Image (cartoon, rainbow, N blue to C red):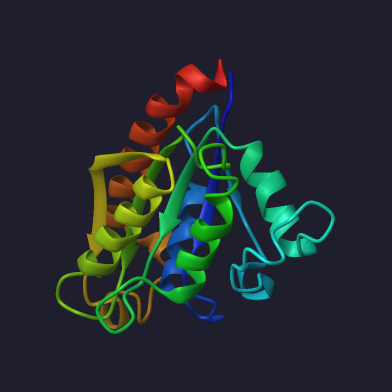
Length: 186
């Protein structure tokens, strides 16, 4: 049995530490766990019910929904922008919340982790992402948290994949997410 976890990164910046953290998750995924790092959130149009109708769903939204539909769980990587969730991540949650009650997030385990420049590691944004995912119908893993502070200093010279403490914590998170997803993957 293999568990497929879809990773969505809330930062579009090429040197994003959250992107690097997601890459570390891919690299250090335990056996039997596949992390799919989704590309294209920057191309996803803002959610609009007027275009979310059969036959006119934007291609990138349809692609995201298709990939998400094949996931057993989700791992959201959220930096903190002005004290809250990045728009690109919130927009992805909005697209995945539809159709109401049957969106790709519905009933699936979701964990939110990340890193940020500040001393708290982006906890406000991560809490907001958990809230939005829960309202969207996901089964939020409230006890699965990883907030890494001072990202600019911590990862100035080392990729998160090469930080033993971070990778240990990340592997623990991946184990908990995959265990929560295992019943649906069976």
